[in-house]
Image (cartoon, rainbow, N blue to C red):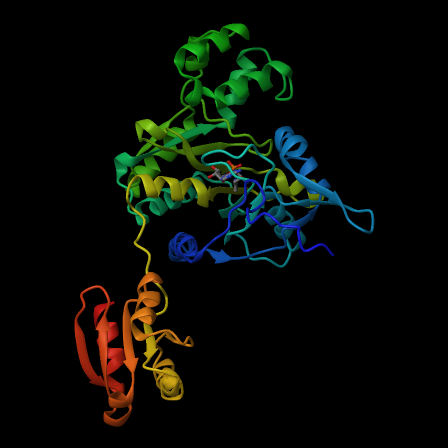
Length: 417
Ligand code: HAM
């Protein structure tokens, strides 16, 4: 083998490496998701990222299936897809155990998903997506609960009511609109173009939107005249009852999947420089039917880690990095490694997270390592500490030092964190 080959250290296009500081942010987002979902009574599930390719052909939508899936043939000749979304998987899981499961089901998951997209701000080729779904209820109460969770997630992340807007639309409304326009089914070219145009409405602005409508021979008043659907106004009322703010009816909300059948919604950032969709979802009552069993009503949404992280970053809402390691034990020289390891053992038993110096570096340089790794406390083990059994615990942020016996160390560190 040639020793001249140098591999790139860059990650594959459109995916991310997570260094400890990135992992800290990722964990914060996941922990917040989990806390909120469990507080609403949702149970966590998971599945493999590999699925048979055919799972997506039925209902996911042409753009994703034809242009965005990572599909390959395995060694046994089977076509396999890296899941581009979780909804078909969860529908498959629910359909598989339809008889055993106690409906209504409240389920959540945090899968990584793969889409072959042109990487750009907010769009990558691998992202993690909180999936929240409620199965077995075809009611506006269920729709309301789902939107209410979306709202409460934003609040838990520290967003203010004016920082975001929840736009609620309806596939039923769109069907009525098509009927009014004399278009018989949703797969009609004119219908597809209209949906695409509605989907892009927020991005392209009023003038271009109205032009697009003209090209389809539809007048703007015609779109508006179909008006707010009855269901949506009721959902709005129920949302008001549970103190959910920032919601509005938006007939332009379509969403890109073929499986949505009723209420659909999309949460937007209101920052004028970043008026983007953050996440969304809706009702899909027919998806489980592709597995041949009964029809199971469902409503839910997917919230990506990339867009929420950008949102929190631009609003200054991300927590500051803190190392999970609470104490770094420096050694005066290598003869003190043994007592240092002993000290670590008793502190670990008390529940503290502790790292011990293993280098031959001078104490000053050991402290620099701890500082760079943002470990909040250090202690130096030398002759005096070993003979007296007292340790000087230094707070790296304030410089304050406290002398204590072993039993007091955890108390000092925990009293500040
Ligand atoms: P989706 O709109 O395709 O819906 O994705 C939901 C969210 O995932 C997006 O709004 C965005 O936050 C994030 N997301 C999607 N694609 C990417 C990407 N390439 N890079 C970064 N973030 C991305 C669904 O996937 C539905 N299955 C959600 C659902 C669950 N509906 C009902 N239940």
